[in-house]
Amino acid sequence: MNDLIWLAMSGAQALTHRQSSVAHNLANANTAGFRADRSVFRAVPVESQQGSATRAFALEASAAFDPSPGPVSATGRPLDVAVAGDGWFVVQTSDGGEAYTRNGRFEVGPEGTLQGVGGRPVLTDGGPLAVPANAQLSVGEDGTVSARIEGQPAALLGRLKLVNPPPSELVRGEDGLMRSRTDEPVLEDPGVRVSAGALEGSNVNVVESMVGMIALARQYEVQMRLLQNAESNEQRATQLLSPSP
Image (tube, rainbow, N blue to C red; front, side, top):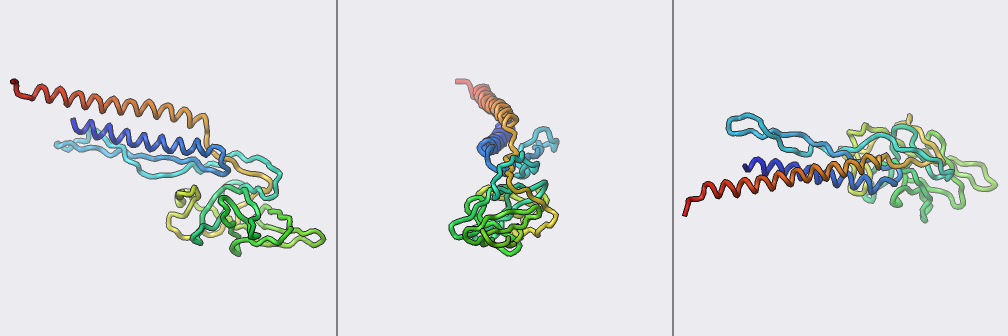
């Protein structure tokens, strides 16, 4: 009887985790460059005293994300940049490390540096990019950033650091940015291309996520019924085994 309780509980916990993941995806359906979370679970057989695996627990195997690209829309804003195909922009974290994002909504900060999501400095092949005052920026297909000041020729400021690690080597941090699983900086990939004046949207499928939430709610109800059945069976067993007065 205890096996039923533990199995139903593990199933309910797994469904709760998946529900939170789907809710997080829906909350970021309009976040530029967002990659939908994926919850991967594995079945662990429960061995009885005879050694036969008749039931299985649901345990989380790994936390991953959907690497498929989101829709790209033209904005006409020079500092809106979308990665064309696979690849990531690199921003500097508060501790001086690197984080990776597909959100290419850039702007020039008050200190004159090119900033990305959350005001984090955007990294180039020479570190954070310093922008001259009153300069108009343009971004080339290969990530080169040029500045033009009225009455002066265009000047090359640097090239955006663009990386393209396998999705399995990245993990999402608490701030929503991706990081290397090994905590080592990812090497630059000169083959990554970008498109200026455009922005990539979230790859979350809202309809699919809503249907998934409904299905998860129904599956959770099944697990709750199993727990109620286990409790009812325990009560009946107690009554049958209790000595008669």
